[in-house]
Length: 155
Image (tube, rainbow, N blue to C red; front, side, top):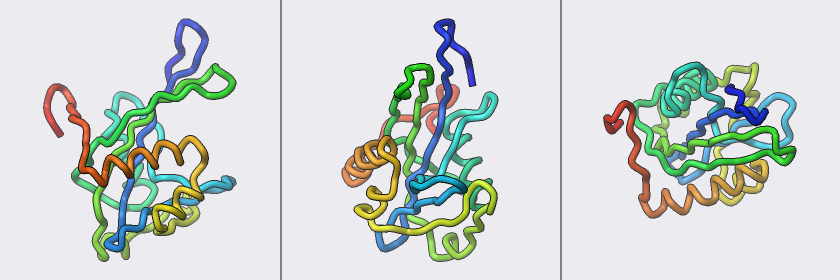
């Protein structure tokens, strides 16, 4: 996290929308949280948003993905106005049956996962994530992805 001159705390987080072959969305359930979450988490050190997303997927579920499409970027100021987050939401594609079979939740941060219909997934997510994911699902359905570069190279 970085501290702004105006005293606000600023961070960046990445999430990944993943589907099964039936069009269900992977939702995580985390320790002590009442809402479900899209896989992902905060950026660490000098990693890029894409690298953060890939790392979180690997750490939380044991999945190694090679390609992500950037769907949207969302800036959010928390209600108390002292915390700002930039969320990068990626599309990770459709997981194979083999990938799904090999998912291993870490048991620490993530307790369990479930593949849910988009409608049920949206009802499970916290309000900010729900709005972000609803927008992303519309963009994914249109195959409308953003250009994403790291060090001036498309990844």
